[in-house]
Image (cartoon, rainbow, N blue to C red; front, side, top):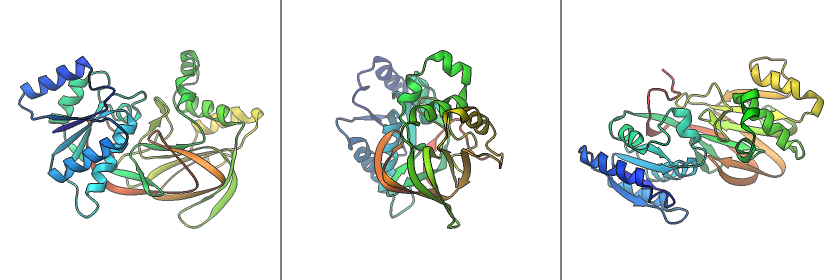
Length: 300
C-alpha cells in the first residue's frame, strides 16, 4: 500500500501513530507527501505503474479527485488493477462521508484500506476532466459551511442544501441550454446544477439521493430561475423529485448531458473550480477501483 498524504496533514500525530500501527500489524505501507498542486496525481500515476495494489488518498475531496485522475491517466491503455482507499483529511470530505468511510479516525480508515474489499465504481467526466463525487455549478461550498446549525436542522438534508443554494444564487441566474441524450434541448435560466456520481456535496448535504456509484449513470439536478414568492414550491419539488408537474426543479438519471451557457459558468469538480461556456457531462462505467465499506451507495 502507498499513502499519498496532503502536506498540510502529514504532521498529524494521530496519522503518524496510525501508520505505525498498520505497519506493526504486518501491512507494508509507504508514504508520499505532497508539496504542490499536481503532486498527488503524479504520485498516483507512478504507484499505478509500479503495480501498487492500494493507493490511499489522504486528504479531502480534491485530493481524492487528484489521486483518481492520476490512476486513470496511468490506465488509459489497459485495465487498472490498482484500488484507491481514502483517509479523510479535508474540510468537507463529502465522498468519504457519503460512503461511510471513517472520518476523524485515521487508524480505522487505514484498517479499512488494508482489509476492505475493492469494487469497481463509475467516474464522471466534464469535458476532458474527471470527477468521482459531484460536479456542481451555480454555487460554492461556503453556502452550507456558513449556514447556522439551527437552520440546517430546521430544513434538513437535501431540502436545506438546495434551498440555501437557490437563495445564495438568486442574484445571478445563468442563461443557457440543456441538451438531453436524445438530442432534445430546452433553454432557460439555471440557478443551480449538479451532475452527481456520489450523493452529497457542499459539506454534507445530499443533492442526489438516488445516486449509486456503480450504476453506469449520473444523477442530474437543475434548479431553474424562480422568484422569491415561489421558494415554497421549490422546496416541495425538491422533496418530490418524481413529480412530473414540477416547474422549477428537474432531476434525471442519464449517461450524458450537455449544458451550454451564454457566459462562462463555473463548475466545481469535487470542489476544484473549472470555468467554461460549454460542459459535456458523461459517465465512464466501472472505470476505477475503490476500497469502500458496506454502507457505500452501491447497486446490490
